Amino acid sequence: MSAVKFVRALGGAIALFLVIVPLSVAAGGGSSATSGYSGAAGVLTRTRSGGSGLPFTGLDLSLLVIGGVVLALLGMGLRRASRARA
Image (cartoon, rainbow, N blue to C red; front, side, top):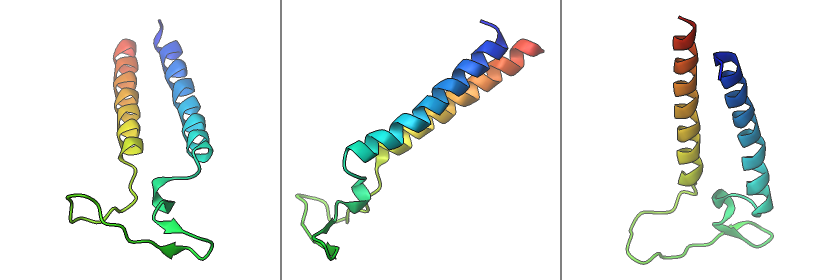
């Protein structure tokens, strides 16, 4: 596969990823940031978890991991494409 085709395929995969992830979050009913609120008034509910004393901040770590993997793959692809030209 030539470097240009590889970069185009990688760009297409990233574009597809950027379309699919927001759609899957929307289909799931929102993100974890809104799970602490209930009712029409948006009153914050306090629930105690089993063993941790730390509060849940609503940060979805799976999206951060997926984003990191995509950035790492993009970096490796760009490095490979630039090495093929030289």
